[in-house]
Amino acid sequence: MTRTNKLLFFLLPGIFLLVAGCSRQAPEKAAPSATAPATQAPQASQPAPGQTVSLPNFVGLVKQEGPAVVNISATRVEERQGNSPIPRGDPLYEFFRRFGAIPDPGEALVASLGSGFLISQDGYILTNAHVIANTDEVRVRLTNKRDYKAKVIGADPYTDVALLKIDATGLPVVKIGDPNKLEPGEWVAAIGAPFGFDNSVTVGVVSAKGRMLPSGSYVPFIQTDVAVNPGNSGGPLFSTRGEVIGINSQIYSQTGGYMGISFAIPIDIAMDISKQLRESGKVVRGYIGVQLQELSYDIATSLGLKEARGALVAAVQRGGPAAKAGIEPGDVIRGIGGQPVETLADLARVVGSTKPGTTVDAEVWRKGEKRSVKMTVATLPA
Image (tube, rainbow, N blue to C red):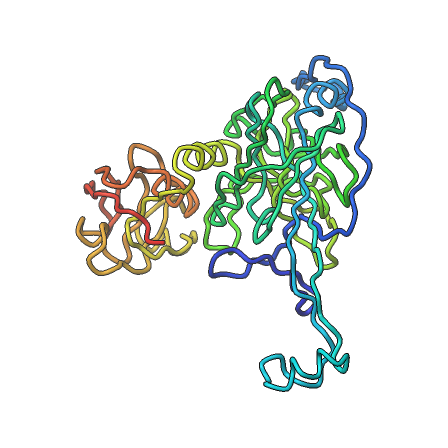
């Protein structure tokens, strides 16, 4: 992470994002916590009008789901830079180095800490792609203090999802939930290893859903006020039903630490990515070849729409699927593949998850009229 004008930038493919990834560079491991016995997870209660809202108890959730959360340590070997007045490529460099006039730079071991969680009893683990990026070895530690070397099955920097595998069976696993059932204001909990402190629990509420960040990925992030710090990256975000509904991925910060805003990748997107990584080791996405713009209320009304719902087409790629289907700049795409399009994130999510070669119907608003076009989704170039 690079510090610029007191703001931290997190790098995703091709674009800087005004948030910070929550993995941590750390020279040593922290002591793991003990595994707690399983009990039932707390249930969300709906108070009657005028009734006092009681705070949820997360004790059962932590005891039941905590053993499936793991600590990830990823290491890589870097060449230590020496203090040499002679450039390394100079013919005299080796001569002076042998006589001790130039210090030997040698190698340094760099470690990063993160979190993850087990999604199968035979050792498949979900985490963030940035936790294990550019590393030589990845190790996973369970709450029972058992340590495993992990194999990286695949990683997708576009969504920041990675899939690992350890050689073990009979492991505890998390329950996968439906993030579409989440509501802003609902209580959630994160379990992870902030600053290396294994199985730390933090709680908060869902601040917003479908939050689109300026990363170019159009992942509809879940925004929460759950305390997430370096080392929490890749850890699960739980609902009060004891189900994982997201992967803690990023924070907005001006200091490098938690400032009340954190973002999680919806678990349904992560599970779809993990399925592709498990089957082929890579992710194939659909695309239609359009450049989109946020639809404001003023633009919507000027186009004859009563509400700002949809994705405004700013430009169309020549020869792309959208151009072949007759999509034009100024069109508003309000539905595709039978799914409504409320925002840019909706369109990107649906198109990206559509199998290339599939022909879909698109609902388009143009010059005060609703139209329907067919287009064939192509493969997103690498």
